Length: 234
Image 1: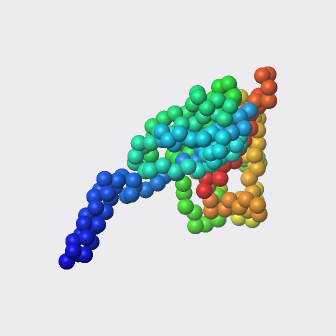
Image 2: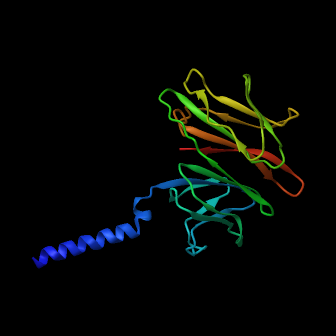
Image 3: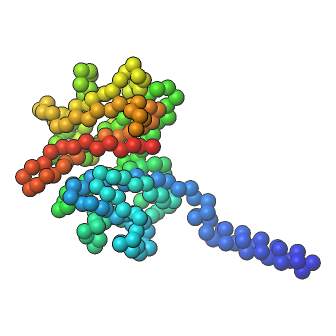
């Protein structure tokens, strides 16, 4: 009898703990892909919540032209802070987020002036040989951009700074071959190009989603050009 009472007491205590911490137990996680496009900044550091981190040993670092997935609880307020490795006092980005579904956070600019762009990743699922390509403009200098396929049609026009397209579908079979995208400003000047072969052995993109982001690549105080960076959105 005493044993039965003990079991009941243990169950009651367990239910009480579950009830008190139900937010953590029953909430699902959502993912944020943090992309570092700050020229001249080798690492940025991601800080989640108010727990202090050791900046010298943390693995929450993102190298330049790199990206890392981090998870937070879905539908729960959570503070996200991003700092430069060279300046951990002044944040590049500091917001309390309450998110559902998958998002990407692009941080861009240079060591002296940086910004951030948060976007929901509305990923598509493909059963046929299709690749989904999204275009993002985080260039402060290019202005609105257009993208067309060399030898083909215009894909988009008037893509403003800190804006993005949906994932646009392109056939991804051997017969279709590769695509070379041209990025141009409103005057028709060529900013840069990038080639996508959906069936490339080292980085197959067929039946997947990916992003091409155009950003400012500063060489020195006098020379800056626009560069294209690919992010695998899967």
